[in-house]
Length: 325
Image (cartoon, rainbow, N blue to C red; front, top):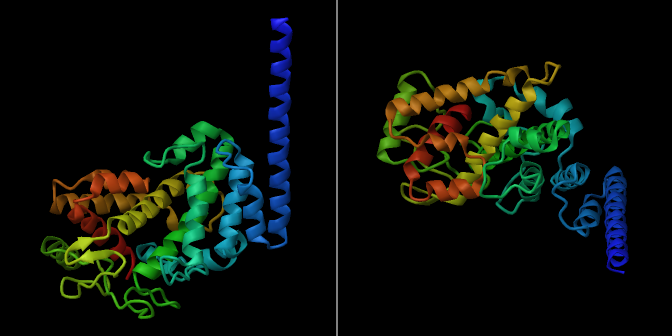
């Protein structure tokens, strides 16, 4: 009698799981149809009603696509219109600031909020904790060959969101992406309000031929949403920029080796350039916490660098100020 009861229970569980998977698959199909019709909101609602499915690659990709759709992102536009704007890797962030998705005008902007939701859905696929650094290697190890699909999409969205971030916090001009020339929502010439030590570092960069554009040791006005007070940073917003950049580099490294076209040829040496920037910082400050270059989790960034404003300033001065002019 007990064996019969156990068998019935097992069959019911299997039937229930099968029905649930079928329901999720049906939701994915309906969401794809909604996206085909340009109905981003309905696609999001259809999938979110099924609850999180962190191990279902199709669910993850379609929900990320729905969020990105809500943000105004299209992969076809990325390739046809935006990627060709990247003409100088030394001014990467200036170029990204001119992307079609670089429309952010507040922290609540639809483009910024929903692009981040889309990106986070991909970065933390597999149920990885938000306090753990997500990496392309981990996603590939967890999902196998399907992990590369997730990493590739994450790379595309990292480009778009990094451009959004640079456009807003770098106060960029809409047409050329030049830092400090926007003047619509702020007037800052730098990303951060740098302390005397980092101002000296910026001066040394300029003296060695590394341009920081409008931001120098005499023009030191940071974006109001990145600055809490004089010589202090807004840790949450600053960490968003740090992890956006680091995830861009991480997904780029995973993507560039498999891409066969020449659309991304200007991106090939970015990792080498970033390594060089890290060495430049260490020359100026040997005690600099290099973990900041490996931090891809916003929560981890906040935990590691709260109270260490100076190392965040060094990162921004070396990366954001030099790649955005």
